[in-house]
Image 1 (cartoon, helix red, strand yellow):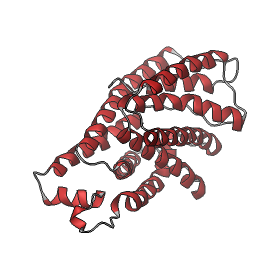
Image 2 (cartoon, one colour):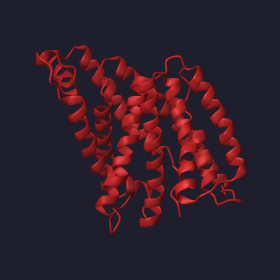
Image 3 (cartoon, one colour):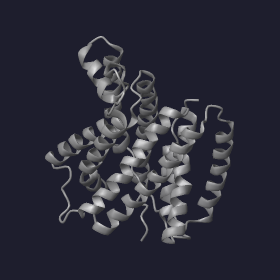
Length: 288
């Protein structure tokens, strides 16, 4: 199945859950129109990146960590461009290095494991893992940070989990290794969202400022992961090696090769990844 990734519904539930017990968020007409515009853009970009990522993996570029590294490189350039246009300013003082490293590591794990999950599982199960992030995030907030939510949201989550269970059991393509990486993706994404919200509150920074602060560490961590897990090859002869480095070599050496065509899809995912992040207004989910 190739339906729309359920990110919009997840964001709505997270926004409702962010309100204190017994309260609901106040939303004006202008906020509604803006949210609707973001929702439409989110659906379009999210559907596109999932399908194009699948196309990348099908074309032979099955290196999800390296793909994440390319996305983070584009993120750095994108935010530097925004900063040069004075669309945001760097925080003063900036976040401590350890905090930036910690948030970046969760972000790399989130995107990296999501890409691994997508490469191993069906699009349907990938979407299921996206929905599961919501109850996991709220569960972590409740058990570790004593942050509760409303009964209305709890009921919605109960219905959601029933659907997740049915979809997981009925997915004939699901394999244990795919389920394992899907679970890791959910846990790291939940922690990333929680830390995003808490660091914004703790240090008084916007989402754009936070993302710009951690972009360098995300790119560095993804590069190390790409080298260690997808670029080193001990096979002999080296020409038989299936690694990201050798894939890029073949793409550069043969302009009309399958590898060269696959890199165009990789480039497309880089722009789509920026679009997904830019049009997805995550609510602050940190405790406190």
